[in-house]
Amino acid sequence: MENSVENLYLTIAQSIVNSIDDDWSISIIRAELTEGSIEFQSEYIPTLSPEQPKYFDVPFEIFEAFEELHAVTSGTDNNWNRATFSLEPSGSFNIDFEWDQALADEIESLNNE
Image (tube, rainbow, N blue to C red):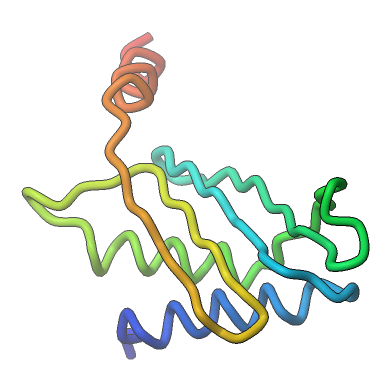
């Protein structure tokens, strides 16, 4: 059964919380989607040392959630291949979707080689 967008956001948020052992003020996951794969950059700002962002491993649940989120939200006029998900410890979050034409062109060029 397909997850709702809200459930996918909740899965991403809960997986982030479970992945960070420190106290933190904000966490950010940047996702870049190419055909059949997703690359992540993930970091958080520790409460006790905000000048030194730390990285955390992205669990498989987040990969699956982004893959499904892409399938559910992308359409003819709503395509995206980059997303940034930011989360605060309070549960407040923001997600921005972006279409990067240069990335799409690069992938197409590699596929045509």
